[in-house]
Amino acid sequence: MPTDVEHLLRTEAPQVLGALVRRFGHFDVAEDAVQEALLAASRAWPVDGVPENPRSWLIRIGYRRMVDLLRSEGARRRREREAGTAELAMREPARLASPPPETDDSLTLLLLCCHPALSSTSQVALTLRAVGGLTTAEIAHAHGTTEATMGTRISRAKQQLARAGARFTPPTDADRHDRVTAVTRVLYLIFNEGYTASAGAELARVDLTREAIRLARMLHASLPDDAEVAGLLALMLLTESRRAARTGRDDELVPLDEQDRTRWNPDLIREGTALIDSVWHRREVGPYQLQAAIAAVHAGAGSPENTDWPQIAALYLWLERLHPTAPVRLSRVVAVARAYGPARGLALLDDLNRRFGLDREPLTRQRERAVRAHLLEMIGDAQGAATRYREAATLTENQVERRYLLHRADRLD
Image (tube, rainbow, N blue to C red; front, top):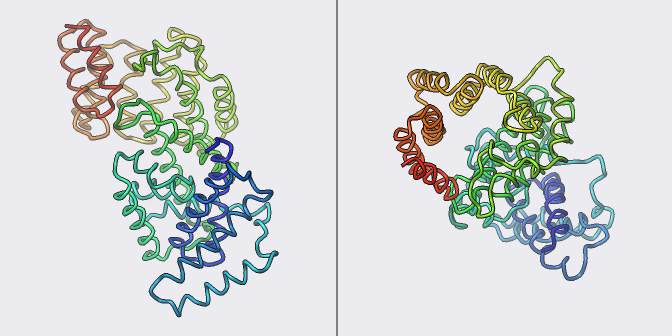
């Protein structure tokens, strides 16, 4: 399928789903109908051309599929009225018009998919399916599972939304902050899984990072005054700017200090830096803004030697106080070691392990060993470093990362 058609379908998917859900309710049925419409378009448009009004085309197909799905369910008589309403809507051209330009259902859909009744995994899967327009097979591949398993998970998530009484309505002022926080967390998870895949033969999943950035742009367009949303988008853009330089000619992993910075994407750097600069002056600074500020310091350094590591270490300390998670603490270790020497970094790592068990925490136990190995190598303990590199290699399912760690160990033997 041509890239421009694929982009158009993913852009229109939430609007079409919103139109169906607002008219009929039944999020689960409407989502299935939209997927059928997207599939029909992916087959027809590359051959016949994109229709003059693609959204109306998709809504019309979605309505028809909605009728079929509603009629096929057990409570036929109760649903006949809804099916009849859909048929009337299809006969009336006025009802087939696209939603007015000011009607944007993207934020409402994102909030619905990130409902607190769902687990993080279900929130991610449902967001990719309903708002991102990814197929169940694509989502299954991203999670390293089968299409059947992922289909069941998505189906259960939609059932949970129904049982929880979730409604397709904009958030109230009272719950807006918590709901938006859930959305940003889900988009952050999608991006991170794409940037360094948890398993597989490739270091990154470009389809996921691209989708996370697209959805973050959508969220930022809906909430232009939200500083943390801007910070999240800035963080993604600045991080993604380094993607081309992260692997070498033979797909080997290239660490940050060894990357060819001429391969960094200057357009993404400019856009991301401008975004974080535009909100940095505000009084309330959140975790995404701080991470974006750190990424901007890296992006602004013309060479590894010119990186302002003391500033990065200070920003990580600020971030740790605001968001005390194991990954943040481990990142501060790296920054402190680069700013003040490996011995100080090892001392901090030992202290954090005693207090917080970074070497046992699922989110950091693999990277803790890789960081310790690097610091041991820096102080000249080759044998200790090689041992830790090999331990780290056994704890990752990403084949590119594993080869890199084993190569580092072999060089020290």
